[in-house]
Amino acid sequence: MNKVVEIPRAAETPPPTPTRRVPDPCAMVIFGASGDLTERKLVPALYYLFRQHMLPEGFSVVGCARTPYTHERFREKMQAALKKYLKVPAEDGSFLESFLNGLFYIADDFSDPKAYQVLSQLLEPLDAERGTAGRRLFYMATPPSFFPVIVAHLGSAGLAKPKIPGKSWTRLVVEKPFGRDRESARELNRVITSVFDEKQVYRIDHYLGKETVQNLLVLRFANGIFEPIWNRRYIDHVQIAVAEDLGIENRGAYYEEVGLTRDMIQNHVLSVLSLVAMEPPANFEATAVRDEKAKVMRAIRPFPLDRLHEYAVRGQYVEGWAGDQRLPAYRAEPKVSPQSTTETFAALKLNIDNWRWADVPFYLRSGKRLPKRVSEVTIQFRRAPHLLFRGTATEAIEPNLLAVRIQPDEGISLSFNAKIPDTTMQIRPVKMDFRYDEVFTASPPTAYETLLLDCMLGDPMLFTRDDFVDLAWELLDPVLNRWKEDGRKGLFFYEAGTWGPPEADAFIERDGRKWQIL
Ligand code: BG6
Image 1 (spheres, helix red, strand yellow):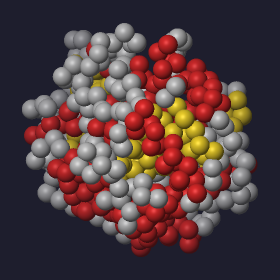
Image 2 (cartoon, helix red, strand yellow):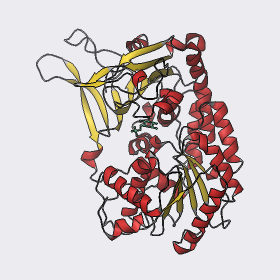
Image 3 (cartoon, rainbow, N blue to C red):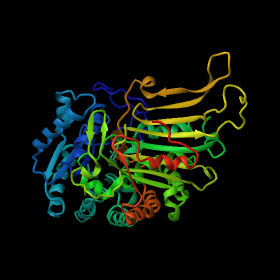
Image 4 (cartoon, rainbow, N blue to C red):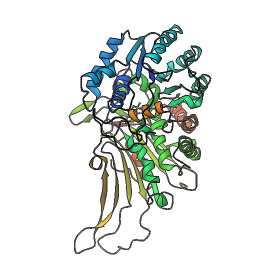
């Protein structure tokens, strides 16, 4: 991980210092470069890095896709994308030009082996002319069905092995979803590792690149006050919510195949959970951190399929409203079946069977078309063991909550009880708030900036290891299979723009708890 904390985001940022790690020039080959991810996320992230002198001059991008662009056309498209998606507008002039000059494009069919000769012929001269010297990052931004064929061709074309052993490197970045169940993930892994070593493979989960998600580790392990109470003695339960107000955004075909659980829970939500629940790693290095994450996954109790409804609720949005805007039902979205039983909402209860977390439920909740976009981890502590204030105006006091807001309004707040100023004893919860934007002037890097840089620097800590993926599927496969068998039975509907089906409320209320207000 890039360990530098605060870097001003400006073109005039001073050149690299020993505390800022800058990778050696490399070529990043993006398969599926005409797609949305490249222009929305990848190229803006690369440009931010370039603008902050975090990327070397000779850094090059080779976009690959079937769409017939020339180098020039691709550069124009990317320039337009920068204009559209950069939070801080791209300044024109030589700086931008120098970035754009490092972009190249190959229009070809990547299921055809000949395309890889063309790719080699483009990469070779870049090594000398731009100093990329055989350092190559292959980024899989295509639909997952293309991953195996691309990987196999990279292998046969001799592109998977480092060009100059011991000096140059080759890495493969794989976007999610990594398989659609355990079997397909294993098969994909088998194909990948028949060509690449596991240490060359970077499975990206962009949630792990978010500042606030990384800050979970800092909160827990750089402070003396939290860790002693971060366990079953003091914590009643944990909630992790990842809510989105957006619907499926023209991704009907993809979403029909995948659904909420595969799209969000199998990766993002479980990654966050593993950081909340893991034991302190032996050191702050990739292997130690990833070992601890995998240990959490191993300790999660399998879902009891005979009582699944007590542990899992799924929902799908029907027509609803956002203010005065009418929102269509999921089944009315383009490329979605009118009888679809795909879930757009899921709430799950997990138990982690280890000494730290025995009997502390973790409630996970995620959905599309909820009232707002918000991701938050809430730790609810046990109530004070003795109610001293009985017999006063206060009969019940609220438990303490520690809320880590992942996005938006990134921050942490601790709620505790305070006396209302008055001559009587009345108590109500108040909050102590930390907000990133109030404390730090520099805006945080986007997840893709952090992750792309880590990958070029060869730091896999924030990438998902094969065992984590496998364990996540092992946990969820039985639930997904059961839901598939059940079809319409047990699928609850909710109006778009609401917090999911009422059954999800009943689900947590049965345990005497309630969803935190987000
Ligand atoms: C992606 C999912 O991985 O994450 C999308 O495929 C989802 O469906 C997105 O909208 C959410 O990411 P973020 O960073 O906007 O919370």
